[in-house]
Image 1 (cartoon, rainbow, N blue to C red):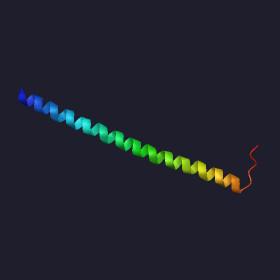
Image 2: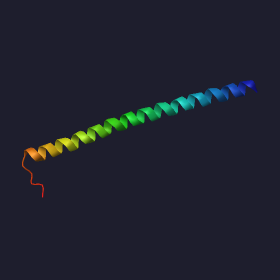
Image 3: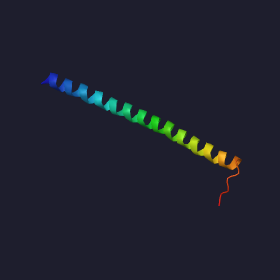
Image 4: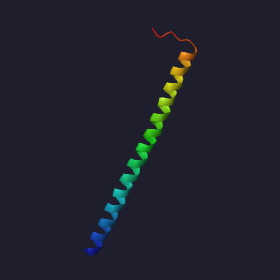
Amino acid sequence: MNTVLLIKNIYRDAFESLGHFITKNFFKGFAWFSFGMFSVVLYAFIFRVMTGFPFQ
């Protein structure tokens, strides 16, 4: 019985750590993706302003 409880605790700790790792990396990737998309929008806006696009 003690062995079963030890195995259960090992798996529970492993999956808790895995969840934090995945969550942290997901938000880090999402932050880089958002920064990239904002950069594209900023570039497009500056390009349109510099070429004289009429905003009507």
